[in-house]
Amino acid sequence: MRTIALTCLFLFAASAQPASNFVLLAHGGAGDYSKMTPQAIEARRDVMVKAIRAGYEILARGGASLDAVEATIRVMEDSGLFDAGRGAYYTKEGVPEMDAAIMNGRTLEAGSVASVKHIANPIHLARLVMEKTPHVLLVGEGAEEFAKSQGIELVSPYYFYTEREWKRFQDAEKEKKAGSGHGTVGVVALDQAGNLAAGTSTGGTVLKMPGRVGDSPIIGAGTYANNDSCAVSATGTGEYFMRNVVASDICARVRYLHVSLDQAADDVVMKELVAQHGDGGVIALDRQGNIATPFNTTGMLTGVVRADAKIKMSGWSKSAEPVVVPAR
Ligand code: ASP
Image 1 (cartoon, rainbow, N blue to C red):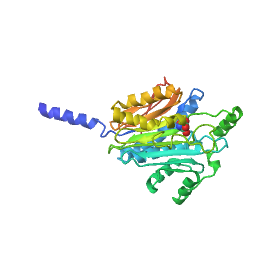
Image 2: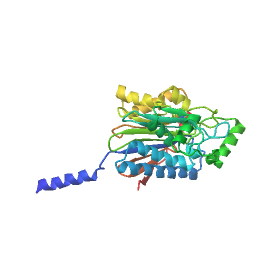
Image 3: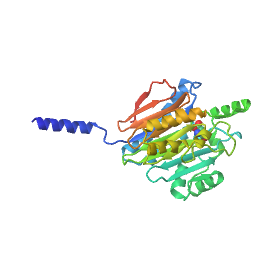
Image 4: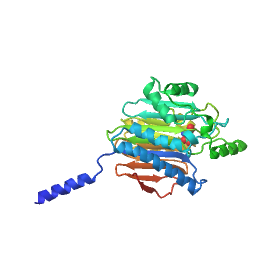
């Protein structure tokens, strides 16, 4: 009798555990959120929740981390609220030039695009570069010609018009003040098969020079995934992330120094970058489902979901109490 009761208890405990260990972690950019109204922060949080739900559904039904990463980023690109896709910052010339990358941690296949001006979802084009070409990175007109060949409609610059970005452009022009804002988007995910993936999409920094490319589409700088170590998406002033090949450095520390993900990410973002005044942060995830979200700015909006179907949003300030909402 006692054995039966114990067996039942064991079976119950086993079934109460989440069936798998999938994780999806997203960011909505590092920077200073203190000048944003609570309503504006809430609006971004709401979009991120919607985006994370799209990724969660894919992972929950056994889908690939790569698909979850792309689906989550697309929702944020379409919202117009982030520095990616529809809401991308403008260059000095008053039009956006966008960069994006995606990477498969199982195969190390990667695809990215840079300086595209007429693509609504740069993350999708990056995925096509990975899957349909022998190359890793396509830029500018060549990338857009390739998009056309894949049946992607090129959108007019007016697609990217938002009052917010137009005003930011005019104000920045007046002050001649280029620099980083916040709103790049990135996602890392671990699927039920144990595969990691990472993706990042951005309009880059405020009033950047036409032709400037940041860290996001540079594999190993702003985006990296490798099943042997970890998956990383970065945000911040890209020049520092490129010089320090931040994403691959974090994964290399995990792989070769055998330090925890947390320590590797923290050492790079809070020590190396801080010493160089490199502002920003990263989201990182390993195959055990450990996550790290260090940022050396005042904020970095993040959201994470696991098999328990709870989305935990945090990071709009260092002391922000996390907000937890159901994934369904
Ligand atoms: N890392 C991006 C870039 O430099 C910008 C950002 O994340 O805010 O292009």
